[in-house]
Image 1 (tube, helix red, strand yellow):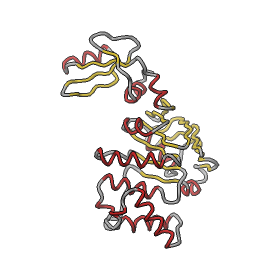
Image 2 (cartoon, rainbow, N blue to C red; image 1 turned 90 degrees about the horizontal axis):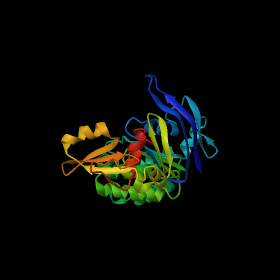
Image 3 (tube, rainbow, N blue to C red; image 1 turned 90 degrees about the vertical axis):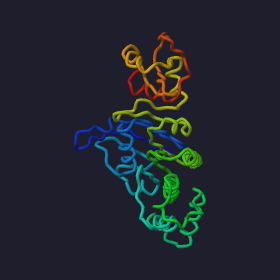
Image 4 (cartoon, helix red, strand yellow; image 1 turned 180 degrees about the vertical axis):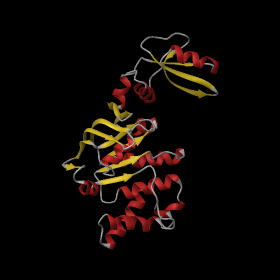
Length: 290
């Protein structure tokens, strides 16, 4: 199964061009869609999920024309948005059962078995009688994955899934997504670089509605190999460095700025060459340096 997006564009009524001629080919496995807030990631996800129509372009999931066969796509889709609401006093078992009915599972025994299998898979069976509204953030996200899996979808979309999760819940969520990604297309939309570097074999970087890079993280790192230089500096020197050099990122380490510069040759001034990471590729692309 392949998801093929061609020349997709979307401009909202307020004039914001959310998608600008986006083309991507996404195969089975984990695919990371990386970009800053407001880059167009959610607009692309909503379009693929048939929650809004593009102004132009096409989306094909196998033989399904997503734009013109919305109901057919929805039968094959699992979608976990960044925010999803639940009924305040409804248990996980009851809510999954209700969602299974909406997905077409009319046989009560079949639904019961399905719900139990899903709750076991996301490690929530022991909490099945608790209201989903009382779950922690990580538990709610795992419940969100359970509802995504109803109907054996061929495409799963998760939008900013690890925002706000503690490290333990984040790792559990990673493991669950990686397992699911062995069998279907999973699109992970995020602004968290680590999510993509740890999970995805292929990725795209998007900003201002345009695709800036598509390929494997490894091939992306070749674009910045031997071009990333690092230095710890004083806060008082930081502004001057930003004026003199193509600084792509700064972060405080033990209260002192750690500066990364993208440059072909050694910028001198105490900088040392370092092995690049996906964050360096991300910032270099966003800043238009490559």
